[in-house]
Image (cartoon, rainbow, N blue to C red; front, side, top):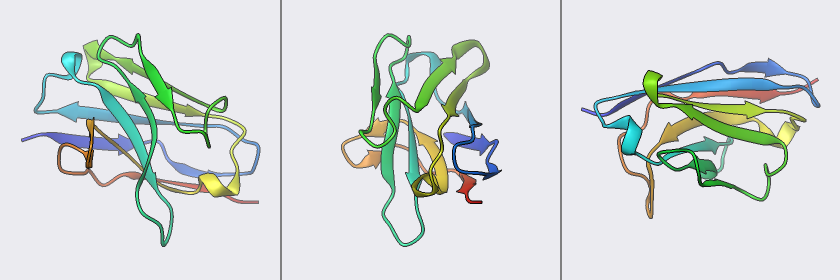
Length: 118
């Protein structure tokens, strides 16, 4: 079965940087578009960034464009999200998945908590 294991979250001050990772298994990672999503307390999960299988096409939500960078290493079945100039509104649990019209195509992993606070 498809599994995603996210890691790298933590507590960071506003304006700081953090990088999170996602290791995928049970799917052909190298041909899969990957996406990062987040869910803030009391809110629905939202799309943050996506990257095509070869990395040529990248999309960001308006709220993170210019501050976040998505990347991938197909040899390691891993997707990354580098976050900078973090704001308190970036606080939430960050997940990865294969994006589709319903959100994520596969069962969600545990996610990794990112908290931006002074």
